[in-house]
Length: 259
Image 1 (cartoon, helix red, strand yellow):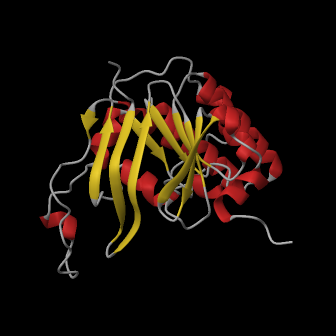
Image 2 (tube, rainbow, N blue to C red):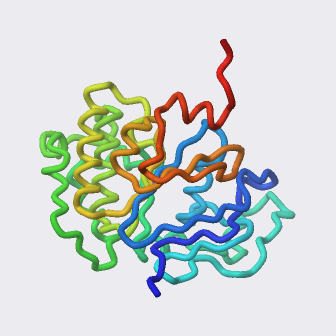
């Protein structure tokens, strides 16, 4: 029996004391990619942060390549808020361990080192690879702008260029599964087209992905299944062949449009 690449079992989480999502069950088989589509503010990013261990799961399990990433114990209670909770309480999930296992999360918002140059950031990225190699992954061929900007500090790059660096860093970590959270958000049409083409090329290398985006056409070109996410729950799962256009998806989530 083949072991799934990622399995979420009845996963719940949020920001204490507010639960953002609950009861999420999801399976990604080896080599598959999925998309997640839904309204802003309904828990998609919180779910991704929980999968990668940035946030601790409240309940349920994250199983990656057959290995449980979280401890089975119950979530601790933050009874006191005037000290560093993580300094005195063992986390149920260690994001460093998740990354070393090959589950790489490129978070929303270009979270980089502003005073480092592009070359410096790219030089340290392979340290997260755990000795893995990703065949054919040439970030400078995928993102030619990074060669032009290699001596520039991150703070002086455009938003699209910072996003290219973020994805390049994720790729240099040799992901077994790559999470991209809103990779094209807020970009100019030209940079967005460049980035979409590069992400398509990464998928062409055989890298499995979880992609959150609001562009249904972009998602459909990359994925095997689309998960509709609404109010912290998976509302529906659509195979690639059944993914409709954007307007129809919005109707599925919100009902008939007002006329």
